[in-house]
Length: 154
Image (cartoon, rainbow, N blue to C red; front, side, top):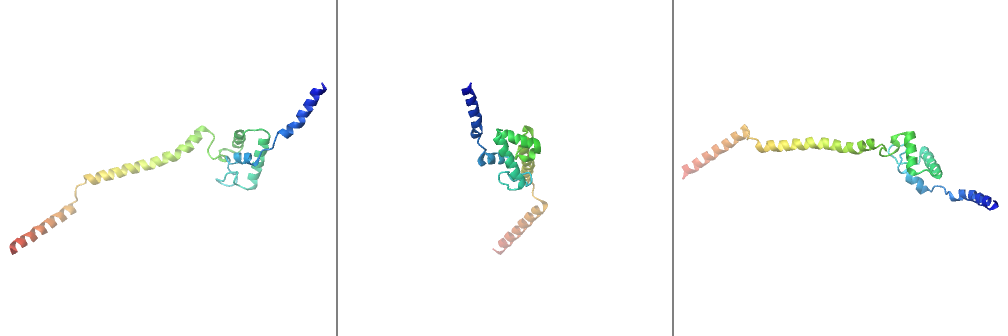
């Protein structure tokens, strides 16, 4: 009985020693996936505002409590919204955020390519303009007169 009690007391005394506080690297790994609530587009691990320091302290506290990094991020998203993460965690919103720029680029490039193709095709099949035909006729008339003059001088 005394041995069991002694083992229980020793176990309880060594638990705080075994539970090491979260390192700065662990906190920064989680903070790198979150964005500053005050500054736009600044990762939490790079920002030094008071709000970011508080969030990092909260991340450290949650890591010390044994929460996983993803659980901490999910907690921040639940409390502060999707803007705290770089890409949305909702699969539909994530797909929309990743595919929208590609769809817009394709939507702009495709009509442009079709328009260029149409212009090239029109240029190939275009008939000479009336001005070009008249200029060519005038050149042919001039040539004919010069040749007639040359024949006349011989």
